[in-house]
Image (tube, rainbow, N blue to C red; front, side):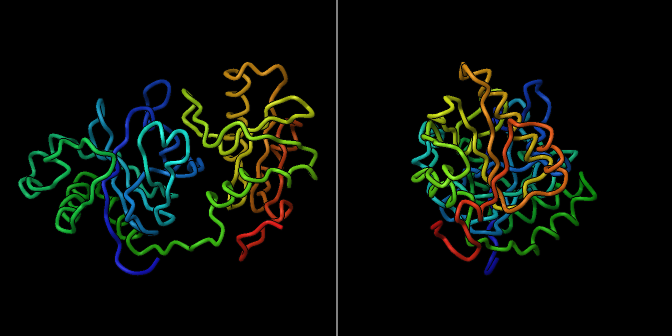
Length: 294
């Protein structure tokens, strides 16, 4: 991360902040260890290291999370879900903090120093707003007053340097979406059926939804530019179950996790089933320091 950090307000709906039972989604809980999805919609000027507060629309109507961009903004309009919703840019992200006592709309409107903030004047009707420095400082102080432990989290996030990866998950996804032949050597003859397929009611997105022409079954590909973990196994298992239930699959779908290695917990979980397969990025031809898979 270099240069000045910008601050944003990202706006989200219950579909993305609440679970099926209406409680807070585990996908947004930094303590859960759940891997984030590939991207979050953002402003085109977002840079790696920028910080964002997350506004939850009705019924919550509050600021409950601190997030940080792990990449610069990149175009996502070609992806079906983004196109349907009118989203143009996204970025990789990480949840830095969840505030146990969120900042409510009533509190925001009662703060005279925020009267001229465009987000409030516009009734928070867009998906993203810039937060000017003076307003950011005021918002941080308000959050810290309600959540004494938040001060350290803001300080840590402001100073945290995000290591830039040569290969982003989005770049890997683009490459494989154009050419699935590297999977043949691993026994899969795949054709692409969808990218970033939303698992309605599940809360996740399938990176690559494929169909194996030989085995005649759906194949779910989950991409990670980090080590696969126990949470990754839970994620891919959930997606396999969702496809089996919602795609009317005749045969049980299988899941493939593509990542830079796997931790012992993932390996132990994988050993219990034949329905989940791990493939290292390097075994598909990807190398750190290179954009190309030969």
